[in-house]
Image 1 (tube, rainbow, N blue to C red):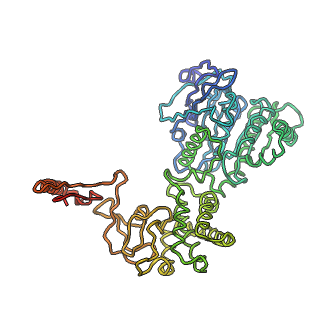
Image 2 (cartoon, rainbow, N blue to C red; image 1 turned 90 degrees about the horizontal axis):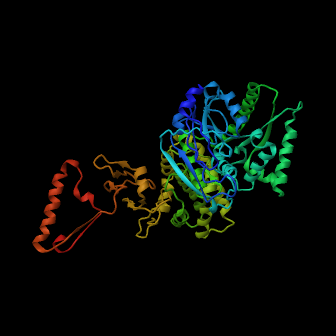
Image 3 (cartoon, one colour; image 1 turned 120 degrees about the vertical axis):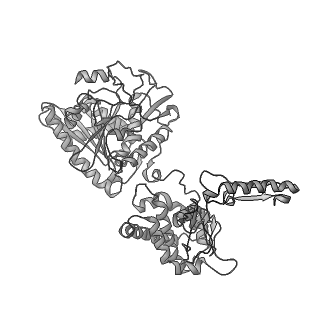
Length: 578
């Protein structure tokens, strides 16, 4: 086996100034991950930048299917950590687990549950690595440059940078973090790493019960091993290093708990590995139970996307707390104009003093929030945290703009939260998670109540031309026969695509009031097209030439079944061209 390893991964002497590469040792369970950290001097201050290289096909090489739910454990150490991994993963991985590689590996294992567990073998902090397995898989990669001087917490050395990367970009996805004290200069070295982390803002915004649990693996030759004594010693080190009053509060914001696992050195490696495996499994099951309640256990594809965004945020020198909810939104999603649309929506309802307003508005607003809060193919989080993180401040601003008194707002917001909870519970029960069907059914029940408030036969009818009253997210683009207007997104969502044209949609009845729509199919501009304008010049007889040309083009396009007039959004001309 060692000959096979040597042929594929020749040993090389690598200094701290080296560039580490993505690694794939000869094991089907392991692939790589990250990366490269470079431009750190062996002594002295850090240079101005570092580089992180990420390989995209890591999970595919691990053999984890896309729909699989994943659990992550971050293991920080060197030789003791590698020994534990050898005991957990078996002989198949022993050839690649030598310790001191200075890389980040991914290993796959399972602890009896139908849940793949990804073990993150983290050694970027190792500054004295003497062996490196330089083997590139040739897969797609993303290279990110980190401007170290732009960060408020600019790292002074490779170990500090590696600790920052682990804390800000990797640990938010992990439910368990393991520190191996023997590889990190004992309990004091682990305390230094933890102290640096808790002096920053929490890396991710999540409930306390879902925070990662820390296991500090401590090996000792003492006959009597009391984990509590070592935990007290570890906390004392942290308190002395920080010398601030709110250390306990900071620790609770970053970690759910910190426990020490004591192992006897006189025990053989297999016995120590089994003790570690048992403690890791018990700790992981507790954390997973809490994370499942808050929908913070992700599928493979979602985990990969979150890892991209975590690395992007870290590379941008941002120390802000990462929000899984906000970063689960699709690209281009924004709530910048939500308060403006909500103010317009309230303007077409009855007077705020009317009791019908307080009853009707929470129904419509809660249903519209559910429609935008759960985009397709995104993780589904509990609706109340989604509302509080993304929508609450916009609702308060809209109420202020609408002139609703502050003492009346808590009652409306309380009704809104109750409706959100109620509709979210019914979403899975009756509509199988289909928010579009749920919103359509909700509006159908409110047709009778919407007609007097949103529809009128008068010329100045209460119909908005500034806000799509179906989603409350965008300005309207298309007007129906009942004079209600919908945005292009709602036309595609609630309309039926035409057989004749791929960008034509038929809406048989208004989604808001239920009145039959007598207008023809709505034509939408393809996403790759701009504004299509046809200008025809005049000039007497010469005006016949462009008309004949258009007629000839339409004859040639007859087989496509698309009239040439549908290819333009605006037609203008002069003289004979008119």
